[in-house]
Image (cartoon, helix red, strand yellow):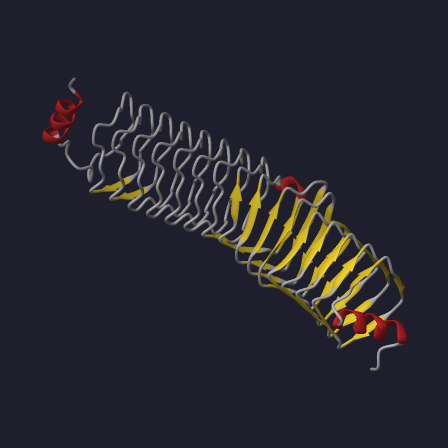
Length: 353
């Protein structure tokens, strides 16, 4: 399709390296043309459609897009700064190293998109739905008035900084290597959500529900996990270190090779969990419930397991070195390694002034 005179003038000026400033474009249909190196500033673009477009190394600053629609488009090495998007749709669009900086999104949708790499930073309004898309690497930080919806989409490396999950609605979303730093997810429902290799470092997640979720190789280091539910979650090789998991529920979970070192698990419920090679060193396990657990090669060394309940549990070469176990209910101690008195004497000798 041959561009109309307005479009021809625009493309000519772009090819000449000119900056396009202060234009108003309404109801234009762009088909199959390339914008390479376009500089667009302070323009208003209403109800334009961009079909089969190739945008490369473009910089759009202070533009307003209303009812615009991108479809089967490619945006590569483009930067949008201080733009406003109102009721816009990006459909079957591919983003490569794409940046939205201080841009406002109001009622917008990314649908069936491929987001290879980019960032959405310091948005004053972020009302955005991501549907049926694949997001490989995206950083979200510093955004305000957030309302996000993730539906039927896969996120391979999503980075969230100081993010409140109460502003996010999940529907059949899948995550691999989600990075959540100093975030808040209090009483949030992650039930059944795949979160393989994700990290929730130093985040407040008290009361959240992770039951039946895939949390294999997930890191909860330094997190507040008080009263969280991990019923029957897959937590194989998970790191729950230096965390507060008091009153949390891990009943029936797969905790094979998980590490709970230096964690407060007072009154936590591990009933019936698979704790093969689980590490619980230097932890507060007072009043915890380990009844019916499989504890082959589990290491409780240096922990306080006073008043804990191990009745019906199955030990095999489990370490209880230097534990505090006042009024602990063991049931059978069969399978617990004998105390290593020589090691204990050596440790006490090293601690002498």
